[in-house]
Image 1 (cartoon, rainbow, N blue to C red):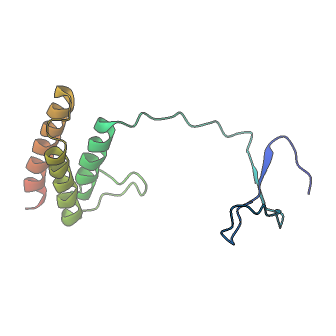
Image 2 (cartoon, one colour):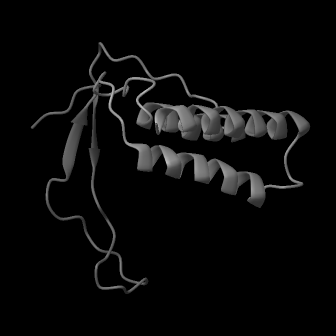
Image 3 (cartoon, helix red, strand yellow):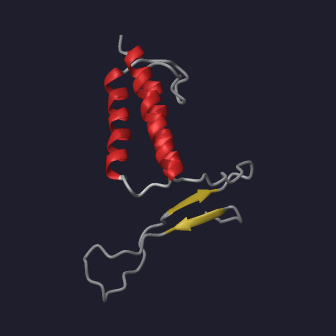
Length: 124
């Protein structure tokens, strides 16, 4: 099997015996992954506190049936999961008290308030 410029080979060289002084010789062919020329690298997304809390709030809205699931594009109601997402937001508020910027604190307060209000309506 030949290699071209869009392939790379991965070979596991770890020893399963646990001895660190031994150098094991690679065995087997490993596996080969091909890069598709049509694929463009994904842009790195910024992951920060606001991204985290927005993901829990969005999960709550999806589980309340107020937004479609991004993978299935269908709207379904799962009140228990919505409640769990809201409880996680409240727990984050308690556990991060005194460690958030004023903006992060305001965002978290607003998200908790908004999701709780919508939960009361959705749970009827």
